[in-house]
Image (cartoon, rainbow, N blue to C red):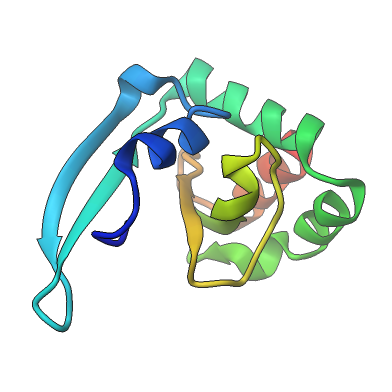
Length: 128
């Protein structure tokens, strides 16, 4: 989150799909010495399943179809799934995929035992 952004607005945007009490904040220094605030939420089991349910229900059909097609490309290694949601749309209560830098970055660890890419792909296909 850039220093010029309102943290409350970003928290509100995250609150569409993340319980507000799960959001933590840290400060980092940007490339040009500017302060950057990083908001993170770590979700486990029930909350993570709820997040994927919200994605499934609220993403536009075209975005959901795209996400399903791109599951193999978005799965890094055997278990790290990545996607970006449009931050400006989230401010308005709408979920949309984006490739923009002005995004909510989502990284999901899909746990399988033993760790297998094929099983992670199957799980993600069922969730989406």
